[in-house]
Structures are given as C-alpha cells and as structure tokens.
Image (cartoon, rainbow, N blue to C red; front, top):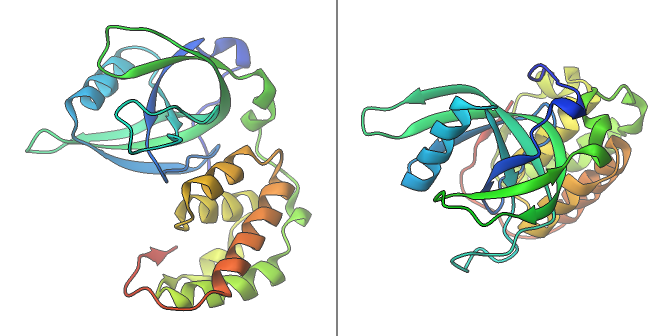
Length: 220
C-alpha cells in the first residue's frame, strides 16, 4: 500500500482542521473511506480542497458530549479521492500521512474544529517501516483466524499472507472493531513492533471471548 507523496516536516501546515470520529483510526499509509454528509464537515472538505488537502483524524474522549475533548494524538491524512453523490454527500478517501500532537485548539469562526499540530515527534512516519521481522505472523495468524471466525468475518488469506508487515498491521488495526481506547493505544504505539505486539494481544483477548456477532465485512 503506497501512500500519498510525502512532504518534509517543514512543508506541513501548522494549523489543520480535525474530524473527531470515535472508533475511526487512520495510520500512516492507511486508507480510510468516509461518507461526509454533515454541513460542517462538507464545509471542512471544501476548505481543505482549496488549500493543503489535509484533514486530521482524532478521536473524542467522550463522544456523548456536544463539544467533546480530544485525545492529544491524531493522524493527518491527505484527501486522495472524492466523489459527490446525487444527494449532496461526499464519498472521500483519506490516505494517512503522519501522526501529530495537538498543541492547542483554536477559537475559530469555521463550523468545524481546527488545531495547532506538532508533527516533529512523528517524523519517522513519513518513511515506510522496513522492520518486517517485528511481526510474529504465526502467532498473529492463529489468533486472527479464531477472531474472524467468532465474528463471521471472511478473509482473503492469500492477500493477508502476501501483505508487507506494515500494511498488514496497520490495516488490521484500522479495520478490527476495537473500542476507542484500544484504537487510540494502537495509534500511539511508538513503532511498528510495539503496534504489532499490542494488536496481537488485543486480537488474542478478543478471540478468547465468548459469543458470536452475526454477519461481518470481508477482510482483504
């Protein structure tokens, strides 16, 4: 999975709009499809298209609040595809570029939220990880099969086996329906090895649970 063209840290804007969405995880070089229909976020997309095309995906700490506080770390994605539907919605794809730390939230007149972002702590995100050995594929594969069977999720195992380590770990982290705190922990993992270990542990714990969820997506 290739990402969008990567600028230098110096080329990133200091202020970006953010889209708080519980459970939605974006990681560098990951692709997140979104269905945009709220007027404030349609305005955000229009404004981003006229400027740097960057949107920050962040998770709210409490999504029940009208203006919830935000987790301090998110991931900036570039708008890499968009399509307007006949009923005024936008179907977009964000391709993850780099994580950021929220330095401050701005008081603005825009209907959407904007923040001052610090990208420097995550400069390594601009380069694909070459640490393939950090993924214990055997252990992950064993627990993943149980996890997917429990949830009636079909998987293209040939694609899973061929996927590079970073693609596999980040794609699973984005797709699997973990809770908000678990998604945030995966986002904040310091490196691919740490994320791989955490992801495997989460899948093992979920696979050890009981019950079954009817239906499910196709993982490919």
